[in-house]
Amino acid sequence: MDNSDDEDEVVAIAAPFAEAIEHEDELVKYLALPLERADCDLQEWWKTHKFRFPSLAKMAREFLAVPASTAGVERIFSAAGQMHSDLRKSTKEETLQHSLMAALNTV
Image (cartoon, rainbow, N blue to C red; front, side, top):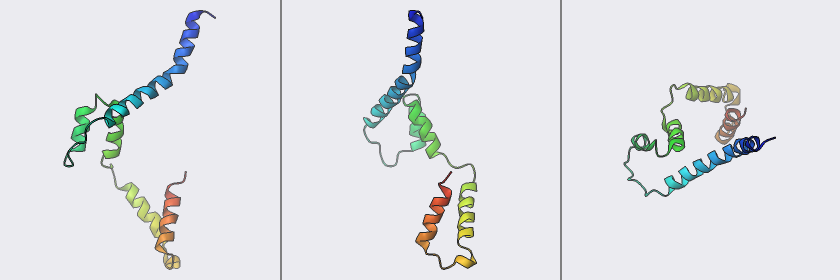
């Protein structure tokens, strides 16, 4: 095996680590920024800073976005209705909450 094959193998192995370090540097830079005003428009701020913090901006778009539909909420209400049927009206509220959490967060 020649030297260039060894270098290619090292680059292939190190690539995920370099990407992780880039993301960590991005986070460190973001956390070092001074705090913004409380009335700051978050979506506008991320739109302005998306090139400076590309990975964080992508995550912010995902978490700050308005859901495309109410299907998720409707699914929760449906599950709650099935768990709190006429035969189970005496179930405690806390038990229903725990049951819903377990049912909706399992794979």
